Amino acid sequence: MFCLEQEKAKRYSSIKYTLAIIDTSYLLLLLFFFQGLGLSNILAQELSALLVKPYFVVPAYVLIGYIVYYILDFPLNFYESFILEHKFSLSKQKAKDWLNDQIKTGIISYIIFLVLISAFYYILARYTQIWWLVISLFWIFFSLILAKLTPIIIIPLFFKYKKLSDEELRKRIIDLAVKAKVKILDVFEIDFSKKTLKANAAFVGWGATRRVILADTLKGKYTHDEIEVILAHEFAHCKLKHLLKLILANSVVTVILFYLIFKTSGYTLKLLGLSSLSDVAALPLMLIYFVLFAIFTQPLENYISRRLERDADKMALSLTGLKDAFISMMDKLAGQNLSDRNPHPIIKFFFFSHPPVDERIALAKSYRI
Image (cartoon, rainbow, N blue to C red; front, side, top):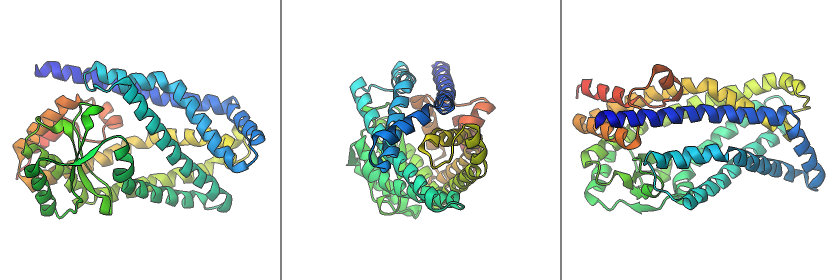
């Protein structure tokens, strides 16, 4: 039975890896096609001629580009996020509910992207020599605001919150937070099962919005000890200031990316026959920079993340002393989420932001409490 479960997880993971590569390659192909054939320039010119107010051009361009990409990417997206999840019995979500989530996600993504790209054009026009630094700082600040607002605005759009009804478990988690010297608003349960049968728990928010959320898919499958270890891991991230470290790492990456664009865009713009980055027709070029840069930096970001996750596992074990519960919890999560327990090193290098399950279990077995 265990071997069959592992084989199923390997098949599921293999398909997910393949789809991720196809999705990225397909996006790059579309961007090169749209930019290289002059379609972006045609769209920008048509919108400039059609719209009386120039400040409507960017929102209209982004909206049209987003809709066109969504339509072209729909078959791949539908297969990956709906058909595949049902095929492997990881979801019971209805197609209409899936589509409703897609619409909400699309609207949120459009608004966020529009804010960021509008800020880019505004700053580019006013800080010709240091725009790369100013826009980096703005994007970093905006990401912090999003982290604060996500639990109170974005998550409720997709899930229903309610205070955890299991008072014994709730008290245990709050006591654990006190022990870890971590402040939380409260412990909440969300109706995760209406979208996926995978299990999850998280410590989200920032400042006054910080809270624990438990997926209802944990119910009846995990003991209180196992759930305590899960949350101890999340509290360890806070205690060890991992969020701050990740913010600093991402900030450095963001600054390097925009500086790279600043230093090289003159050559790439000339190559494509574009006048300036301030021209909305050059937006696909900007996105090409983002995608290619992400491909090269993701392995490094994954490595840093795996180191932090390993440290959080150690602190969770030290904080709770529940070694057996940690091991059984990891086994259950791997089975329920169809995790690739022992991936090939290349797969781990490119795709894993967390240590594989077998490594985490081996760490727990060797850890001295």
